[in-house]
Image 1 (cartoon, rainbow over the protein chains, first blue to last red):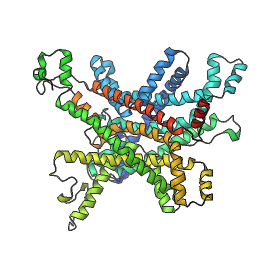
Image 2: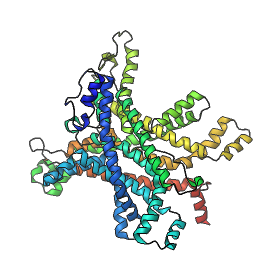
Image 3: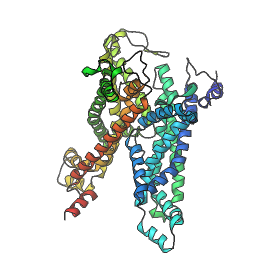
Image 4: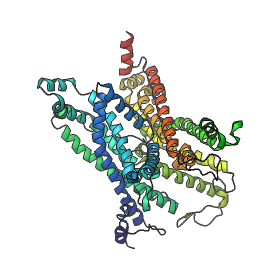
Length: 268
Length: 294
């Protein structure tokens, strides 16, 4: 098979299009690059969805944690503590078996045992907890002057939050939030190693990379390919968040704009 | 374990559980917790040593050495850590076998990599194919320790490299003014002062290390995740005296609570340690302590 045929056969294999059988012998470099790349679709899907939904949840959590009322603060604190204090790997396992039990109760929960929904929910809660803590820190370091100016202009309630507090919070939190996004993107590789089954061998990039490593007994080809993909996508994330960072800091005089320093976090 | 455990069917709920939770396999489960703690106890200092070496190499004035150090630090960025774990397990294993192969069977002429196979002579297998089970277990644990140390050493190198640069430059200049050599400046001035700058990063790393321990499961060690899956699965009366439905959820809940407690305790201890180390230091933490005392 030429490389073009391989792309047609396996380019979308991870989401169920193309050839059903994975290559079993005579693995070419092209096979590995295409199939691992196809698996990246899942990583991108998980990261994008989790970041999108997690963002709103995180904002809510940060506001709740910073609130004066105990009924709002305590649940948010516990949520953040539970998801930041335990390994994501265990969270995945627990969630999978939890959903498996629920499935026995009501068929409504059927899709939750599949990775696309169940693992996504865990990732959303997880990233919301981490970014909630980041946003909470930013909320507490909003310059007094900004809030006082908002009060002086007669901003109250929702407009005050929407126009003043929230944008400032985002601006302060953005560098840390960028790291969180990268970190989450890397964490998506855990999904198919933690209970959630890769149905019909539709897995993510690491799933295919370890498939090749197991079949060829040669880790020196698939893992570097995976690494290159991840470095590429990490650079894209940094670029996208950098654009947003410039937009958030647009109104500041040039010397107060802090250049973004990327310091990706480690395992979670 | 207890004398009344001979016939579990007759027991009440509480006694049944007291028997169930003390069966032999559960003891292996509890041993696995110890395994995790041992892994942490070995990995933390080894990784710190690796990190120290990496940071020194990165600071070196010899260009290739500095590249080596910086490259080591840089591998942790941009690539998911699990990929490293999965990679190193196979790579280290093959590396050991290959080295032993060269030493033990120098006359072996066949290539080691034949297509999809990795073939060394039978005497060079690590551990030997005839070795008892515990040797295999210990070996895979040993590989896991090295893998963890390499990966976390890179993280630690990153933290220590930053901490060495955070020590006020005036301190170094003063040391030079007193006529200390580079080596003396490093060991007598830089190293003692860098820890307070490194501690926040290192404590973060410790938390991360705790949370990375379940990945032992991926490295083929019979750890707590392995046992939780084994023990929690549905047990039918045919094979065991203690039949139960699928309890894996509860086992993982127990693991979740274990990790939460562990990280919480670590947090408190590290906070105390930071208080102690900040005492009398020219940092914001030390300043705050001085003000509070005054």
